[in-house]
Image (cartoon, rainbow, N blue to C red; front, side, top):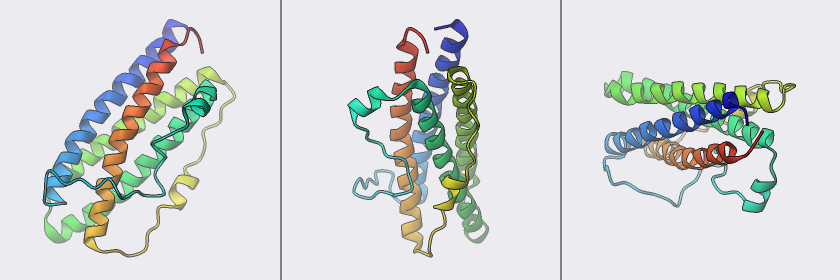
Length: 185
């Protein structure tokens, strides 16, 4: 593997780890401010629009580097879109309830990290396959429209997005470690 590619993968790994730390801090703050309990946990609920956190190990090993990076790109894009929708929703609530802006700022910072991570993954994909064309976000955005729900359900949804993003970033960091350990791309 060239030093250039190795450096890109290491940068992605580092950004993934630092983003995960931000997500963990935001999740803690979100649970305190939105859920009313810093120790709130609910592992029973899931959102169908979020990327799967578990994969079959043998299938995962069979993925090409490009397919693994493409999947990561699409998953990150989905999380970014979900956070964007949640941030806009919180901004509307803020205008009504005068919510602390630190929560919104934290979400924006994580979105910037995710955008940077998408850019890095996209760059790595180009190295792996120079003919790659950037996909449009239409598929990720189509499923984000939700019917009206209670305030509590909306808050739980935000919790689930952050909880699963934390877990996803752990998985993504492992993917980058695997790529970095390969002798070549």
